Amino acid sequence: MKIKKVLVSQPYPESGKSPYFDIAAQYGLDLVFRPFIKVEGLSAKEYRQQKINIADYTGVIFTAKTAVDNYFRLAEETRFDVPDTMKYMCTSESVANYLQKYIVYRKRKIFFGQTGKIDDPQLIAALNKHNKERYIIPVSDVHKDNLDVLDRNKVNYTKAVMYRTVSNDFQPDEPFDYDLLLFFSPAGIKSLTKNFPDFDQDKQNVKIGCFGVSTAKAVRDAGLRLDIEAPTAKTPSMTGALLAYLKENQK
Image 1 (cartoon, rainbow, N blue to C red):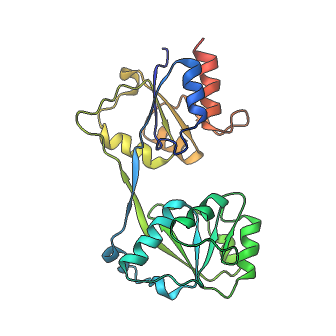
Image 2: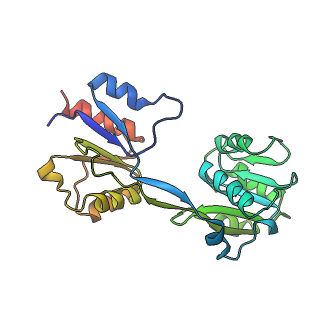
């Protein structure tokens, strides 16, 4: 079967540029960016049930732009005026730069790692240097970050759930006529089975690709066939795996 229409279960690229576009042009694909999941912020009332007061902390550890948005949203909704003395620790430079949406960027209070991971050596060094701060970490209800490295380095931190991942439901009149579905999280697979309980991969002749070990497990646990898997030694990215599959099967 020739792949013609592909659903990439991610938001449309903000920059308007993506390797997916190059692949689509090369193979004449109809490409649709459509997340199966969406992020929903907790209300101030829901947040307060955790009994974690934002004002008790002198620093924040951000692992994603979504965390930044929801921290400042809840700060406003709980009438907390974030002080200029607040320290910000970010897992990547892009997250650190995103802070400019809410605050004036000052190097003495914003620190970031290079790898996008919580155990980044540069980030841990900054946390050790500023070890007198009390940190809050905004997370989602399904976060999987391993925070053991913070415990080992005796970082004083508290996790606070500020947003949740929910199914981004398809509308009754929304077409679902794809030849290939690409997933990036187990929640996306859960949303697929929720939206389409009668989904029959073989009957509908749909290929499935995914990124990540946990996502691959979710595909198989749902009784689905995984046709394209990343990362692997040969294809470390989803676009690389897609290109390799098309080269092999779309001749």
